[in-house]
Image 1 (cartoon, rainbow, N blue to C red):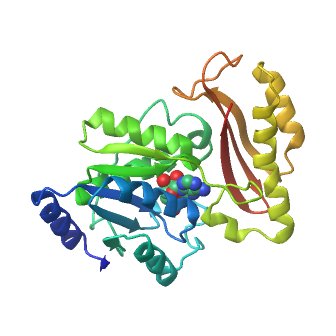
Image 2 (cartoon, helix red, strand yellow):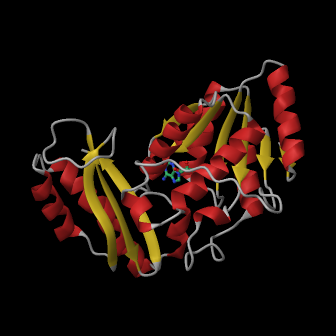
Length: 271
Ligand code: AMP
């Protein structure tokens, strides 16, 4: 596995693979890798000739007072995991933006709800960094996790709207044995907080298994089960459009974001 820190070297290598007719798969991450990230690498690995993984804690997608500075990092451990998954190139840039970088990519509509409403500017940071990375890696295929279901929808829309020749693939959400959605931020949780964090997946699961069709009743059930310190949202939305629903008459998904202690966690579940 090669490790590359310079944007030009990354693009040069990826262009060379392309010119050799090789299919390039890409998994962008912010590091502190867990089984959720590795599952995306396996999907890309199985469908491409070359696998590129990036690790970059993107300042543009963090708001003031969020955890940019304290975001967990483990470069050595991450590199070993990538190597083990058959990654061909690990991209570890110091920065992705040159002095005076002034371009932003923004998807409207889909970004108004859920995390978009709670984290102003977050998705603009995500779409800006993903389009920057797509321009460097020029991947045939890129894999994103359903853990960040809204992010996946936003990136699909951006790719379609801009006509980028990248196949965006969604990977299933990976959970711990007890049901907690795997997240690099779980590292922040104390034992007591982790126990209460389980109420996110517990509430979503109970909603999915309840058989209730009316979304107000479903939400009442979910609210009663959450043991969090601060709820950002609990919503039931159309799984395609992310628009609100009154009854479950089409594919729907429940979404939750909440703070447990100082850690903000998100989860979602198909209904
Ligand atoms: P992050 O490092 O948190 O920015 O995540 C990088 C990629 O991994 C994103 O596409 C996430 O959706 C995905 N991901 C994170 N956690 C999980 C998980 N538990 N299951 C599946 N994919 C995940």
